[in-house]
Length: 325
Image 1: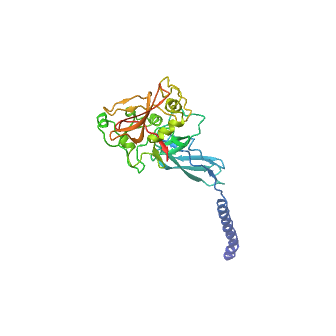
Image 2: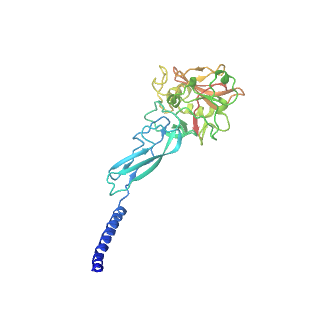
Image 3: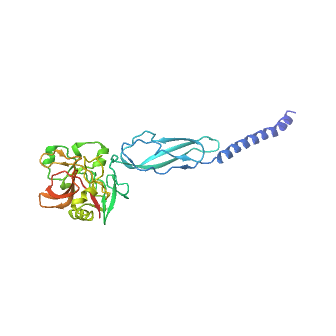
């Protein structure tokens, strides 16, 4: 009788195992049928160093409800550099129907602040980027394409650094390449607006201070520009940024009709290294030497409609504009 009982209970045991196996298979089948959410997120636009990450950059979306966690998080200040990774990890609200997912994009963090220059709203500007990642507006004037901003690069085209010279005594005795910021300021927005000052040894160095495909404008380039704008007597007003946000009053005849947006970056003296003329004058080196000691430059003044051509000591610190080859 005991053997008969065991035989009768055996089918029940087998049925229980079968049911349990079926449940397991069903669970596996449900897991296999979970879907992957679709995350949409494009590489964000370039930002300048010092910009904190926000919803402007961290703006991924998914095709189902859920939450995102970003790495790095909102409020992070990234270091300067190109192709830095941003990651978004997504957790769906309906975890039984959808899997978790992630996506990475890349962002460029440029060295430099934000310019407050007032460009001509009716002009069409292009862009060019130097080796440091600084982006400049460009403008076509006649047959020429010019930078519409003063140069602020701190490396040559081959990657070599240009020496930063802050000491007045070192600057006045300098017979090799060097650059500085007006009164040695460190404010990136001011530097982005006014650019940096360079001596002529930097301008003429064969390692090339201009971006690839560009060159520091020559005396002949400036002469062509001046002629196209109606001659030296009136070209200055057409080149200068309009208004008195950066130029001192009265900023005579300034219309910026050319789109050139010339700004008064001042100068650094060759004789004692002092800084002068910010907001009153803009001085721009040409790549053309006058003699072994002097080189040609162009000057715009806050009370003149004209542009002046002159030559002076190569140790001066002046602004630089580049032109497309």
